[in-house]
Image (cartoon, rainbow, N blue to C red; front, top):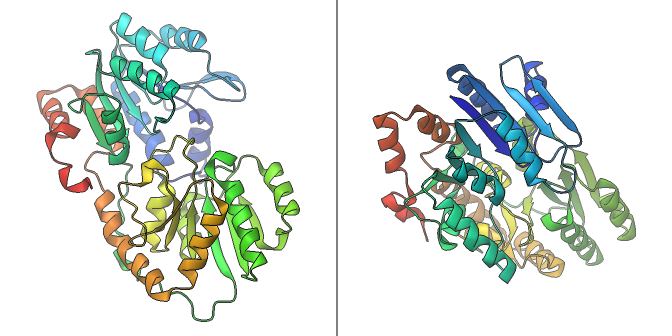
Length: 395
């Protein structure tokens, strides 16, 4: 068995080396993912991880036996070059973690056993999106693409909506072991002087970072004191300049990338967690939401389509119109002025976290497929979206 795993971004070689040297995770389950591929390498003739969007080209065999290829695609993926790199590995099995139609076409033509394991969603709003999705669904429904794994139930329902057969879709989850029940629901601090906000994610416009900064400025205009902590990397210089323009420098703290084990502590000590993605950002279901629910810190989220299945306005979160900084500021103001609402949302976070749990984990989905035993085939069959096992989680 010669396995190739293709992912959009990331740097498997860097992550493996950092973790091997005792470094910390950049995000939750990074070590889980790296170690899972190491285990796959023990049962295969070869395992290659190909990362598309990287600063430069690199091809290295790591100490765990995994070959890591960084393609060096800086602005746009070159499908032809990517297919050449895949073909050089002469794969018998292919795991596609991103939606690149040309690669699926190549795999179908060359009869490579293939599964899709997506952590991203897909845009569905424009006619161009709809046409692209129609042809993507046709590819994914081809018998050569054996399963379509999608991160979280909402994403699974979206792929079903564009035409992928539910008999092929398997919703999956990351390894989230710890039950958050030990943390008590939160109360809004009496006479709070400064509202503590927390954001974790890419610092880019499509994640709503600019909307957050504008909302902070609007609250400041209303004499509401705010301290915003932002964890992540991206367009730091642009947003630092925006902070200066909005005259909110004293209210915003850029933390850079923080170790994953500190994220929940930062959330717990904050009053609110912000998840502000605009509709154009291809969300899966952000781990930020999972972490916030575990800490019982109320979430203020945009109305991104990927959140709507599980986040309900005024019940377990506050929802605002994506891209609307005025609406975001109003949501924040409403929540901090209503102590019972704040507490009730915090209380609801535990049951919401439990509802999000899925039986299939990322690595197990791939492992079962590679195993190919009758037992594993039956297990995969039972986890399909069409099995009815997820009906109670859909609303």
